[in-house]
Length: 191
Ligand code: ADP
Image 1: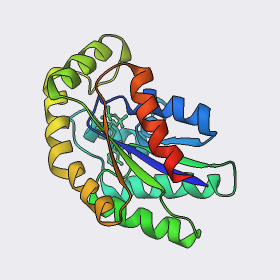
Image 2: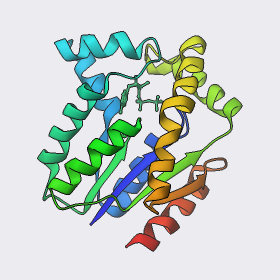
Image 3: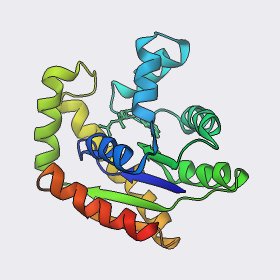
Image 4: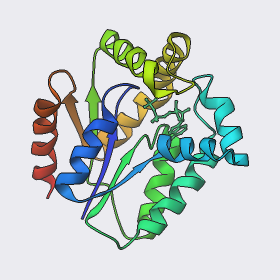
């Protein structure tokens, strides 16, 4: 059983690498960004609330996202080889909640993969994505805010997993294949 977290600043390539990991290791992909964008697309009550935070570059409130994710994890429980969490946990409070959720199911995180990319490159990638993504948060002003939020609220999540000895730093610069090679060696060492 592999339960992996992939984390890193907006634009670091989490989604791209998650797809490759899912294919190779047959894991279930749980992306909180995608779950939220689905709600927004359906114009649900939750989606409308989420959109008001996301379009400003802020995180949605912890209790809201913890609720969404714990449902998704329970639905997934018992199926397949494990999960890859993309975009969660994004705060230390979410990391603590995740420990409880998994503990209740007798499961644990295998490793957190921290994908590191230089800031200029992140901004270039996100602006490029903004030309086609239709996402309300892929514009320069919101990107800068998201990077700031990442630094203050999400970077401390790495320390949480360092203390548990479950942290792996990955250089996220270079070709998609090279980066995937680095990630695969870390995952293989956890099996
Ligand atoms: P990116 O990593 O490119 O910022 P995501 O698709 O992971 O994109 O997330 C988009 C937005 O959705 C975030 O900026 C945030 O507002 C919201 N979001 C996603 N995951 C979480 C989370 N775990 N906690 C709070 N907000 C979240």
